Length: 98
Image 1 (tube, rainbow, N blue to C red):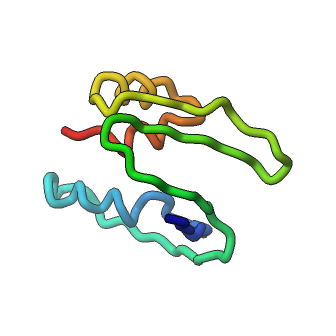
Image 2 (cartoon, rainbow, N blue to C red):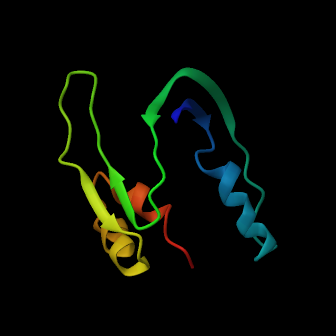
C-alpha cells in the first residue's frame, strides 16, 4: 500500500493540540492553543504488514539514507530504540503497546 502523510507548519502552540489530552487527567493544566497550517509536503511510504517485526527503510531526496532498521515487535526492544533519541526513536515509540 502507498501512503502519504501531509506535513504541517505550527505557527505557534507546538504540541498543544495533542497534549491537551492531559487535561482529562489533571484539570489544573491550562488550556493550550495552537495555530497550524497544512502543507502539500509530507512523507510518502510504501507499507506492507509484518506482525513480528518493525522494519523501516529510509531514503532522502538526495539519495542518502540509513541502513534499514529491523526490530522485533516487542516492547523492550522498541523502548530501547525510542529512549536513544536517534533518527528512528519516534517511529519505535509509536509502536509500543502499554
